[in-house]
Image 1 (cartoon, rainbow, N blue to C red):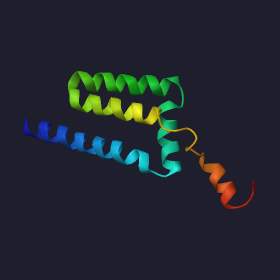
Image 2 (image 1 turned 120 degrees about the horizontal axis):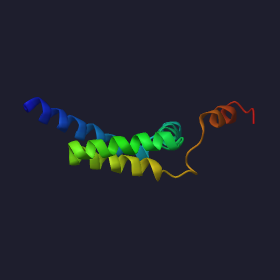
Image 3 (image 1 turned 90 degrees about the vertical axis):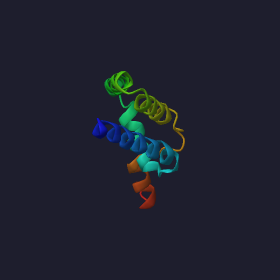
Image 4 (image 1 turned 60 degrees about the vertical axis):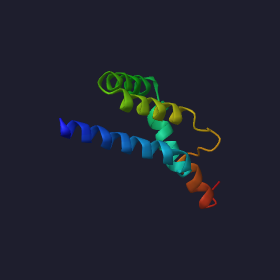
Length: 94
């Protein structure tokens, strides 16, 4: 019982930290999160199923996952640059 409670608190702390630092990450990391969450319909479906099952198990962790998913979906697409574009701009190839 105690291990389950402490494990839940650890998940809550980790998800809270990810949600807090997500807007302050560099553009490559934002692109990776955005690609992971919105790449295609299958990844969105899997992520929403994960949120649903976690909501059924623990409401706090499920709500944090839902907030993380919404945060990933609402990242500004203007600020997200793909990794190869910055590489070519840095090396003056474009």
